[in-house]
Length: 219
Image 1 (cartoon, rainbow, N blue to C red):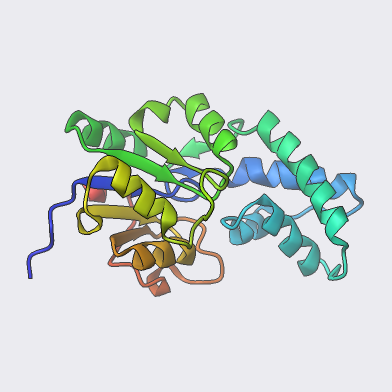
Image 2: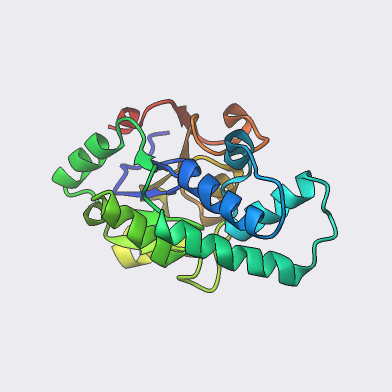
Protein backbone atom coordinates (compact mmCIF):
# COMPACT_ATOMS: atom_id res chain seq x y z
CA UNK A 1 0.00 0.00 0.00
CA UNK A 2 1.40 3.38 -0.98
CA UNK A 3 1.84 5.75 1.96
CA UNK A 4 0.26 9.22 1.67
CA UNK A 5 2.55 12.08 0.76
CA UNK A 6 3.90 14.00 3.75
CA UNK A 7 2.36 17.49 3.77
CA UNK A 8 3.47 18.65 7.23
CA UNK A 9 6.26 17.90 9.70
CA UNK A 10 5.73 18.06 13.45
CA UNK A 11 8.78 18.01 15.70
CA UNK A 12 9.57 17.33 19.30
CA UNK A 13 12.12 19.82 20.66
CA UNK A 14 14.43 18.48 23.39
CA UNK A 15 16.54 15.57 22.18
CA UNK A 16 15.13 15.79 18.66
CA UNK A 17 15.90 19.24 17.27
CA UNK A 18 18.19 20.55 20.00
CA UNK A 19 20.54 19.01 22.55
CA UNK A 20 19.25 20.91 25.58
CA UNK A 21 20.49 18.56 28.30
CA UNK A 22 23.61 20.60 29.26
CA UNK A 23 21.56 23.70 30.13
CA UNK A 24 18.84 21.66 31.84
CA UNK A 25 21.59 19.90 33.78
CA UNK A 26 23.06 23.22 34.99
CA UNK A 27 19.64 24.51 36.10
CA UNK A 28 18.78 21.25 37.85
CA UNK A 29 22.03 21.32 39.81
CA UNK A 30 21.42 24.93 40.79
CA UNK A 31 18.01 23.95 42.20
CA UNK A 32 19.30 20.78 43.87
CA UNK A 33 22.20 22.52 45.59
CA UNK A 34 19.98 25.38 46.76
CA UNK A 35 17.87 22.84 48.66
CA UNK A 36 20.71 20.75 50.04
CA UNK A 37 20.64 17.87 47.57
CA UNK A 38 23.62 16.34 45.80
CA UNK A 39 24.27 17.42 42.20
CA UNK A 40 23.23 15.13 39.38
CA UNK A 41 25.64 14.04 36.65
CA UNK A 42 24.98 14.83 33.01
CA UNK A 43 24.41 11.20 32.04
CA UNK A 44 21.56 10.88 34.54
CA UNK A 45 20.09 14.19 33.41
CA UNK A 46 20.01 12.91 29.83
CA UNK A 47 18.29 9.75 31.04
CA UNK A 48 15.61 11.68 32.96
CA UNK A 49 14.96 14.56 30.52
CA UNK A 50 11.76 14.55 28.48
CA UNK A 51 8.87 14.69 30.95
CA UNK A 52 9.33 18.24 32.22
CA UNK A 53 11.62 19.90 34.73
CA UNK A 54 9.52 19.09 37.76
CA UNK A 55 9.49 15.39 36.94
CA UNK A 56 13.23 15.53 36.36
CA UNK A 57 13.78 16.88 39.89
CA UNK A 58 11.41 14.30 41.38
CA UNK A 59 13.24 11.46 39.67
CA UNK A 60 16.66 12.78 40.66
CA UNK A 61 15.91 13.14 44.36
CA UNK A 62 14.24 9.73 44.37
CA UNK A 63 17.30 8.21 42.69
CA UNK A 64 19.39 9.78 45.45
CA UNK A 65 17.31 7.96 48.04
CA UNK A 66 15.06 10.85 49.12
CA UNK A 67 11.71 9.28 48.29
CA UNK A 68 9.67 11.20 50.89
CA UNK A 69 10.41 14.80 49.80
CA UNK A 70 7.24 16.88 50.36
CA UNK A 71 5.40 18.19 47.30
CA UNK A 72 5.90 21.76 48.51
CA UNK A 73 9.67 21.29 48.53
CA UNK A 74 9.64 19.89 44.99
CA UNK A 75 7.45 22.82 43.92
CA UNK A 76 9.94 25.29 45.39
CA UNK A 77 12.86 23.49 43.75
CA UNK A 78 11.03 23.56 40.43
CA UNK A 79 10.50 27.31 40.66
CA UNK A 80 14.21 27.75 41.35
CA UNK A 81 14.96 25.48 38.39
CA UNK A 82 12.77 27.57 36.07
CA UNK A 83 14.52 30.80 37.03
CA UNK A 84 17.96 29.28 36.52
CA UNK A 85 16.97 27.59 33.27
CA UNK A 86 15.43 30.69 31.74
CA UNK A 87 18.60 32.64 32.55
CA UNK A 88 20.75 30.11 30.68
CA UNK A 89 18.33 28.49 28.28
CA UNK A 90 20.66 28.68 25.27
CA UNK A 91 24.06 28.90 26.92
CA UNK A 92 25.20 25.39 25.92
CA UNK A 93 22.23 24.05 23.95
CA UNK A 94 22.69 23.60 20.21
CA UNK A 95 20.85 22.00 17.31
CA UNK A 96 21.89 18.51 16.33
CA UNK A 97 23.87 17.88 13.17
CA UNK A 98 21.78 18.31 10.05
CA UNK A 99 18.81 19.97 11.76
CA UNK A 100 19.20 23.54 10.49
CA UNK A 101 20.11 22.37 6.98
CA UNK A 102 17.06 20.09 6.84
CA UNK A 103 14.64 22.68 8.22
CA UNK A 104 15.96 25.24 5.75
CA UNK A 105 15.35 22.92 2.80
CA UNK A 106 11.87 21.98 4.03
CA UNK A 107 10.88 25.62 4.41
CA UNK A 108 12.38 26.46 1.02
CA UNK A 109 9.97 23.87 -0.36
CA UNK A 110 7.11 25.58 1.55
CA UNK A 111 6.57 22.60 3.85
CA UNK A 112 4.49 23.49 6.95
CA UNK A 113 6.49 22.86 10.14
CA UNK A 114 5.55 22.87 13.82
CA UNK A 115 7.10 22.15 17.20
CA UNK A 116 5.13 20.14 19.77
CA UNK A 117 7.02 19.91 23.05
CA UNK A 118 6.44 19.30 26.74
CA UNK A 119 8.70 22.24 27.56
CA UNK A 120 6.87 25.38 28.68
CA UNK A 121 5.88 27.47 25.67
CA UNK A 122 7.68 30.60 26.87
CA UNK A 123 10.95 28.74 27.44
CA UNK A 124 10.62 27.00 24.08
CA UNK A 125 10.05 30.34 22.36
CA UNK A 126 13.08 31.87 24.05
CA UNK A 127 15.29 28.90 23.19
CA UNK A 128 14.30 28.81 19.53
CA UNK A 129 14.75 32.56 19.14
CA UNK A 130 18.14 32.51 20.83
CA UNK A 131 19.30 29.85 18.36
CA UNK A 132 17.71 31.71 15.40
CA UNK A 133 15.34 28.82 14.69
CA UNK A 134 11.90 30.21 15.55
CA UNK A 135 11.09 31.39 12.03
CA UNK A 136 11.18 27.85 10.68
CA UNK A 137 7.93 26.98 12.47
CA UNK A 138 4.36 28.09 11.85
CA UNK A 139 3.21 26.73 15.21
CA UNK A 140 4.81 26.16 18.59
CA UNK A 141 2.83 24.11 21.11
CA UNK A 142 4.31 23.84 24.58
CA UNK A 143 3.51 22.15 27.87
CA UNK A 144 1.08 24.93 28.85
CA UNK A 145 -0.34 25.85 25.42
CA UNK A 146 -3.37 23.54 25.49
CA UNK A 147 -5.46 21.72 28.13
CA UNK A 148 -3.61 18.46 27.33
CA UNK A 149 0.03 17.65 26.55
CA UNK A 150 1.86 14.70 25.02
CA UNK A 151 1.25 11.74 25.17
CA UNK A 152 -2.32 12.98 24.72
CA UNK A 153 -3.06 13.42 20.99
CA UNK A 154 -4.64 16.89 21.38
CA UNK A 155 -1.50 18.90 20.45
CA UNK A 156 -1.09 16.93 17.22
CA UNK A 157 -4.80 17.11 16.40
CA UNK A 158 -4.82 20.85 17.08
CA UNK A 159 -1.83 21.60 14.87
CA UNK A 160 -3.01 19.46 11.97
CA UNK A 161 -6.41 21.13 12.06
CA UNK A 162 -4.79 24.59 12.07
CA UNK A 163 -2.51 23.59 9.20
CA UNK A 164 -5.36 22.09 7.21
CA UNK A 165 -3.66 18.71 6.72
CA UNK A 166 -5.03 15.24 7.32
CA UNK A 167 -3.44 13.26 10.12
CA UNK A 168 -2.32 10.60 7.63
CA UNK A 169 -0.42 13.34 5.77
CA UNK A 170 1.50 14.53 8.85
CA UNK A 171 4.80 13.10 10.03
CA UNK A 172 5.86 13.46 13.66
CA UNK A 173 9.57 13.38 14.44
CA UNK A 174 10.53 12.65 18.04
CA UNK A 175 12.83 10.72 20.33
CA UNK A 176 10.78 9.14 23.11
CA UNK A 177 7.97 6.79 24.08
CA UNK A 178 5.89 9.89 24.87
CA UNK A 179 6.21 11.04 21.25
CA UNK A 180 5.36 7.62 19.88
CA UNK A 181 2.29 7.34 22.12
CA UNK A 182 1.05 10.79 21.08
CA UNK A 183 1.49 10.03 17.37
CA UNK A 184 -0.20 6.65 17.63
CA UNK A 185 -3.13 8.13 19.58
CA UNK A 186 -3.54 10.85 16.96
CA UNK A 187 -3.21 8.48 14.02
CA UNK A 188 -0.16 9.93 12.31
CA UNK A 189 3.17 8.39 11.33
CA UNK A 190 6.25 8.83 13.50
CA UNK A 191 9.98 8.78 12.90
CA UNK A 192 12.32 8.66 15.90
CA UNK A 193 15.93 9.80 16.09
CA UNK A 194 18.34 7.37 17.73
CA UNK A 195 20.43 10.03 19.51
CA UNK A 196 17.84 11.69 21.74
CA UNK A 197 16.40 11.30 25.22
CA UNK A 198 14.64 7.95 25.15
CA UNK A 199 15.23 7.30 28.84
CA UNK A 200 15.41 3.64 29.81
CA UNK A 201 13.99 2.49 26.47
CA UNK A 202 16.38 1.70 23.64
CA UNK A 203 15.56 3.76 20.53
CA UNK A 204 15.01 0.55 18.58
CA UNK A 205 12.30 -0.47 21.06
CA UNK A 206 10.25 2.74 20.88
CA UNK A 207 7.98 1.38 18.16
CA UNK A 208 8.44 4.17 15.63
CA UNK A 209 7.70 3.62 11.95
CA UNK A 210 11.32 4.45 11.18
CA UNK A 211 14.51 5.18 13.09
CA UNK A 212 17.08 7.69 11.82
CA UNK A 213 20.56 8.67 12.99
CA UNK A 214 20.77 12.05 11.24
CA UNK A 215 18.14 14.65 10.44
CA UNK A 216 19.18 14.77 6.79
CA UNK A 217 17.53 11.36 6.36
CA UNK A 218 14.17 13.16 6.42
CA UNK A 219 14.89 14.77 3.06
